[in-house]
Length: 232
Ligand code: SF4
Image (cartoon, rainbow, N blue to C red; front, side, top):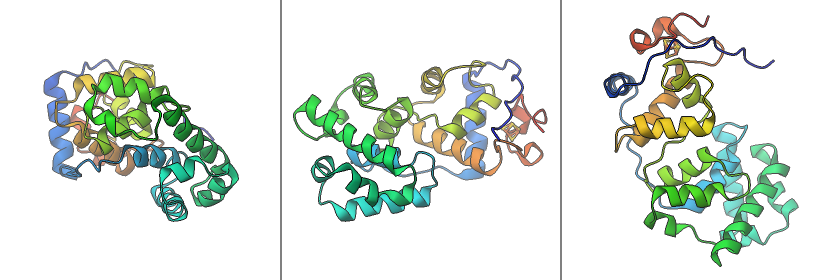
């Protein structure tokens, strides 16, 4: 059964002061994530495709099987799609994901003349977003994962947790599209806090601000949340 939609959030413009308070409270609860960018944009792209509709563990099993089976990304690109599908089966919806991964790898090669995304580190974020979202099935969230997690660029992925928690906190315009939410997150995220805010909103969505039954009574943000106590 699909989750019932939240009632509209009272208007609470995300002033820099409010965002600072939210960031501070989240940091007190979850700490400051410190992962450095890993420098492998193609790996991040494939990992993000594999993460769709599954949990982290199954995603990682599928990813490791793919890496064990092929010596490099060119070999994945040139492999029969049913072979890729078999390799990533533990990650679920493998038929769709295998076709998507291969089309993405082929599209990069066709567009750039080689299978390489390291150049994204040296171009403006907007150019990277434009290139990545032009790849088959790649949206703003996946592009932001690649730019932030692999390359440490200024972008913020808005996944299902970040969009839910951010909407309840009144950070986004009611009924904002995912594209708008990405623009809004970038605007309200202090420079250098991209990874921290993304990770801590995500953790908060997983641990406290659940989709169906948010635990507002135990929530560190309840005093600054316009949705507190309105969703149960
Ligand atoms: S008060 Fe409730 S709705 Fe607001 S962030 Fe906390 S758990 Fe989510």
